[in-house]
Image (spheres, rainbow, N blue to C red):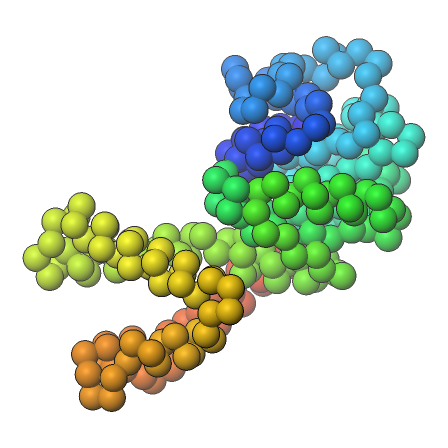
Length: 255
């Protein structure tokens, strides 16, 4: 694993629960999660070769750093990349035409509840993909897509999604405080309400989201009044549509 920043550390916490022996190369870390071996420099690897090399450095650093790791990939090995906006074709060329699988995780992977998109390049084998899917499943839900264009759409929906949710919750708490509650009270109510509602919707055999919404909405009642203010004119739907489109457009630019 080359690099171990915030997302890399979150994933490593979950990856370390499996049978693999993981070595991390990162000069900026004093320790890493999960009992993984940590070295500060590639020179410490000597002539070691690995079944999988994980690219977890910033995309703009890949061209300078990753070519030096080609000699450390086993002949039948493959590369996993969690770097956003760096295409599999470009990374494969950088890594000596190695098979590449790109993944797009999100932050709740840190607690094993992430959502990760997976895309396998044409040269990746079924065994490579199966390992990557199992690897990422330790961090939560996985969605395997057929094209990198779809992976950019995973970025828009899930990869950046926690940011949207945190911002909605922040605004919700702020407005709740305007109704006379302390920040602690408002936070407890908002997060408890959001968490409970999401858990209810995720239950096996749960009603559709529309049906669940309707089940708490009486005609002419308080919830109906609130929902009309929230999205009666479709403004919330349009704002979310614009949010996902802006994120997707930026992902394409970075590619």
